[in-house]
Image (cartoon, rainbow, N blue to C red):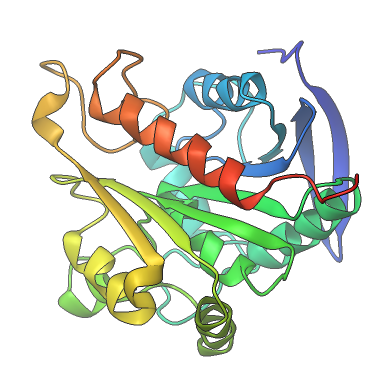
Length: 258
């Protein structure tokens, strides 16, 4: 699948290189795709944000743009990948170091107050360690799922190193906020994980839980802004998108005098 509305470049940092698709003008947002990859629904989500006046950076971490593939295939690759820690507790995945460098690039190319980021599913919690970069002014978590597992300890684990979590907490103490979304019956993002985030960040963690029964019959309840998004006024996912856009506009307004 070609992305005619996006320009493609290769971004490298240390020993990691990935394609990054970019489109739009305005405050920058890094959209980190989920499993099974940069699907057509993910691209459509990015295009919606471009239409709202943002510059979108869409890194391709695995697969191909628009590719439809069985999630289990990519999940196996991620579990053995050196870039992702899918099963490790209290560890920040190495790919986040590359994403932090992408934040610095986006910040250098903008005249806004900072950079927005959103992770989804397997990348949903990446916004927390990315807060190490002071340029991240609008971190968003959508159905964060790592680390994978079914024990209570795993369900409550945030998949972030103590060092990165400490810096994120310091930034929250200084006034930063976080935004999070999840379907209430999502089996991959358990409620215990959201409770753990709330305990760590307190009132700075703005959590929106969407009712799963609002989905059409036969449709899942996991991907808030992509596969299970319903573009219909009054639908919970449509309202969630509205709050997401509002949050980014609040936090990423262009610098005064620019």
